[in-house]
Length: 340
Image (cartoon, rainbow, N blue to C red; front, side):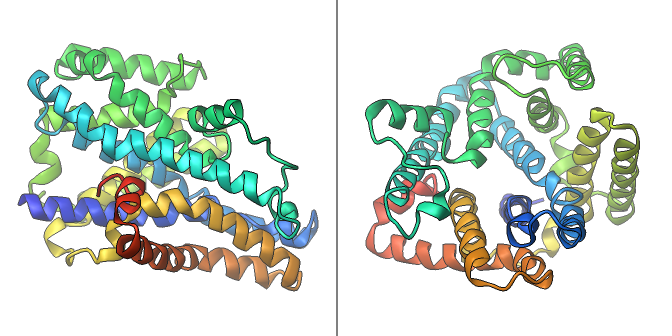
C-alpha cells in the first residue's frame, strides 16, 4: 500500500471511530424518561449501538497510535517521535483540559447554565486549575489521552520487549493475566497497554500484514468480525473480561483487513479534524442532551432519534467551529488540533 493510501485509510478509520465515541457518550434515556419501562427499552436499543459496536472505538485509537508510533521505529528516532507527540498529544491535552475547566467555571456561574452544568459553583483558583489539567477532572473523555501519554513515555521499556519474540510473548501473557485477574497496574490500564502493544508489535515485525494488500481480505476480515461477535456473546454470558478485550481487538483488526485502502476515496477536509472532534464532542453532547431534556417532550422517540443523530449534530457544530478557528485564530486551531 502506498504511503498516501495508508495515511488516507488511517484518516477514514479515525473518523469512523470518532463517530462511534460520540454514540458511546450520548446515552440519554434516563435524562428524558426517568426510571421507567420506556427508559429501559430505549436504553437497551442505545446500548446495542453504544456498547455493542461503539466500544471498539477507543481500542481502535490505541491501536492506530501504537502502530504509528512504532512504524519505522529505532532508538535514533525516539527523541523526534517524542518531540512530535509533545505537539500532537501533550499540548492539546493541557489546553483542552484547561478550556473545559474554564467552561465549567463560567457555566456554573451563569443562571441559565447552572442546571445544565449540574456541579454547583466550580472553584476558580490555581489548585483547581492544575487538578483539572493534570487529572482531566472536567473532561472525562481525555482519560484516553492521559493513558496515551503514559504509553508514549513507556517506549524505552516497551521497545526492547516488542522487538523480540520472547519479549512480546512474555508481555502479552502478563497483560492477559492482568486483564483476566482484574489486576490494577500502576497508572496504565492493562487493556490499553495490550491494544497499543499489539499494534506496535505489528509495526515492528509484520508491517506487510498491515500495509500490503491481503489476498482474500474480505473473507479474512469477515472471519475476524464473526469471531469478534462470538467473543462478545461469550463475554455477555460469562462476564469474562478477556472475551471483551479480545473481541475489540479482533473487531478492529477485522475492519482493517476487510476495507482495502485503495478503494477508499480521498478523505474530506472535515474528516481530517478528528482530534478536534474528539476534544469538543463531550461538551456539546452534554449541552444538547441536557438542554433538549428541558425543552423537548418526554416521548420515547425523542431521546432515541436525538441519540442516533448526535454524531452528525456534533460533527456539524465542530465543522463550523473549526472553519471559524482556522480563519480567525489559526494558532489556537493548530494547538487544539495537535498541529494536524
